Length: 189
Image 1 (tube, helix red, strand yellow):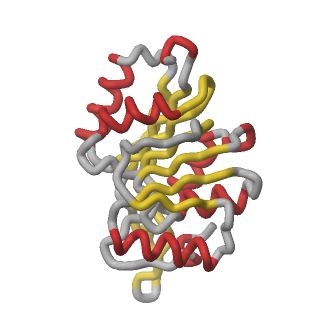
Image 2 (image 1 turned 90 degrees about the vertical axis):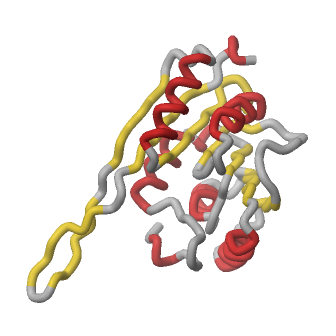
């Protein structure tokens, strides 16, 4: 989905189109029944997942009041009844385990959220995280190694978009983004 389709607000983060497409692919939602979206922001990941997989139940967690308003407006705009919005901050108590967890923001609690995400996942469930900060990437990789994760998929994306400049064109770069994907195995129970 094009980024322009989403209602936006100042200082409310949104996972951009190319990163969202990769993250959704890495979540392997075709075999999932429940997705948790931590730090949902505008809801771009939740909404695109909901539209691609109408039978998927999505729990979107967000703490920022401005983002919660936008998330709800986008959910209504796209008629995504399969998204439940949970105001608050993860980690939080949840009754239903998930098959996939997407972390678009950690609020400074990265290792705690990775541990919580692993507890929320069924065995075989997927955790996908995106970062722009090198320090978060290093912390996440070190923590996943400490947890004994054998197969961690880590990519850096650098996307540029063709943009008009005067009578010509150039490729305007976006920030590089790190994408980590892994799967909960039996020994992580």
